[in-house]
Image (tube, rainbow, N blue to C red; front, side, top):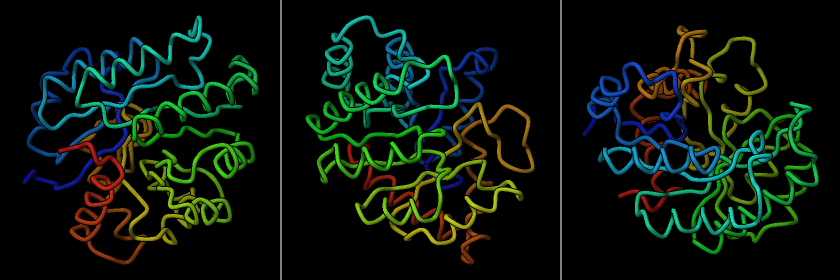
Amino acid sequence: MSRLGIIDTHAHLDDNRFDSDLAAVMERLANDMEAVITQGTTYESSVASVNMAEQYDFLYAAVGWHPEDLAGIKDESYITELEQLVRNHKKVVAIGEIGLDYYWKENEPKEVQLLRLKQQCDLAYSLDLPVVIHNREAHGDCLNFFQNEVPKELKVVFHCYSGSLEMAKELWKRGYYLGFGGTSTYKNNKKVREVLAACPEDLFVLETDCPYLAPEPFRGRRNDPSLTEYVAKNAALVRGTSFEHIAEQTTKNARTLFNKMK
């Protein structure tokens, strides 16, 4: 049993902000965490995540192309490359981080983003893997896509959930999970806290999105998976329960969703 008994379902440990002290960070996490899933954002990032996961028992990987990075895809062979990563490495437990991002105007056009999302979701379904979804300023298209364009059996988590309670209720109807991280600890983020309070007990997981979005009281510094502890403590406060219950329930949820974790 780890010190915290919790799982960070969404980290970016291949980020260069960990270059100077990665070994020390990983040594600490091996003691603190039940498990961590580090996410790919490009093919190169996915390879790095897989390689890291194979070095540490507690670490797992997701592979995929982030919507901010789709310009790096040169041809349709990218899907075959992702598939090979999954088939060749047992510690790949999801396709992610993928999704839609309409915030940055320099991103690929909406139709390209939707195409790449569909292709990667189809791959995940064919491999019996869940998808990890990034949704920024694309709530309407994201909801429509997952209501109409993917098999109902596809397992989905909306990472760093930022939509409305009304949208969340539609996602819960399909059995989709929501990921809550540092933003759920920010006192001015009433919408996310409202969703966290209402979320069915078996449909949410914890995350950090490190090195980004450190929770209170560390907002503004480099985030890392050990700070999932503060996300869990905040969730316990918002939901009127104990840290121990949140740790146990979200670990169960994470292992159900990412069922290829041992």
